[in-house]
Image (cartoon, rainbow, N blue to C red):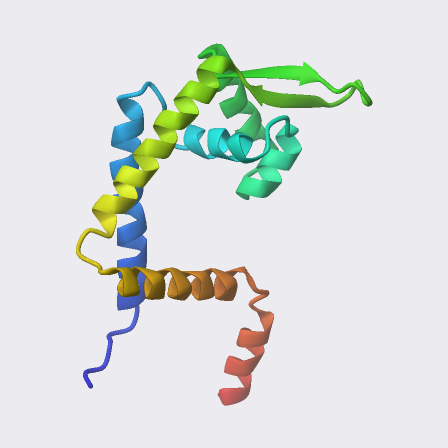
Length: 155
């Protein structure tokens, strides 16, 4: 079996991620949405009424980034912020009717982009790919110190 050159898999993974994000961004632009806005809308579609801090944590981004995006989506009429009933210092973010409609368009765009990306893979290959990507995510999410120690011991 031929050896895989160093960095080839990571490069392919990054390229596929970039191309899929670009294809999705083009679909979203036609709906008046920008890249990144979809993630907040999808998260609120799963659980409406989250705080900006909850959204930032869920999406793995900094709170100021989420706040800026929330403000843009609110200006577009997709979201509204409401004060917390139990803590006046907190605000919760909710989809508006227009936001719920946009969410359905986002979900369609995501499905179309996924269909395009997986077009040449059969169901078994798609299932295998999903499992492999989940393992890669878990590996990267794990604390890297144990791998660094293993590498140091090998030297």
